[in-house]
Length: 235
View 1 (tube, rainbow, N blue to C red):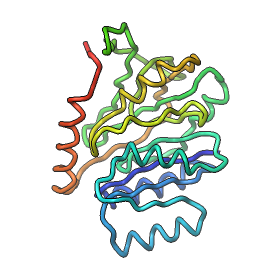
View 2 (view 1 turned 90 degrees about the vertical axis):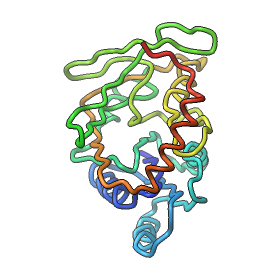
View 3 (view 1 turned 30 degrees about the vertical axis):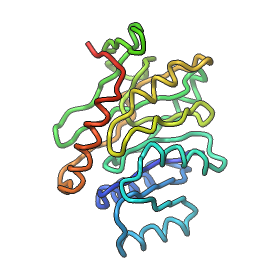
View 4 (view 1 turned 180 degrees about the vertical axis):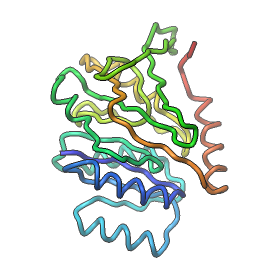
């Protein structure tokens, strides 16, 4: 029922933890993993086991655009109904229950969850609504959500589940940068009025200690390119 999209780059130890937690806490899921890092024997054995279990693995060129890899995974889908987007440095310690919300409210096309930054001991509750459009830019207002259940909004953190039929392609910005806002802008501008929602009842844990210097250098370069492309005004 669920396709789990993971792109991994130079964070093998994080990726192993992410995959194992997905296998444990995301029921009825097939993993779609694209790897644009470096090859090694340990990882090859790990991937071979996943392939034998029916998951999808693709090795890509070094520092390949993760948005382009996302678009390619869309073309490889089988019969899955939902797509779960996670980063390779996320993991779970309890079941991922997004489908409960999607099957209860058919207006929701995509629902995001809380990313808990364990290294800072705080959540990333940056949920925004589009206040107005000024030319080719959007002015955003922060949306507050307390308690259980969910709220409708326009932008959620980069941890979400979507109905397969609503997903646009990712904007193909340079490798290692952001791009979350441009992706949600496409959903916001769709002809069909799909709702984006947010709940803090579904949580991914983010822990980014021990990142390699090589990874950090590529990440920094990518964010610089992303800042030149962003078309949003945040208050």
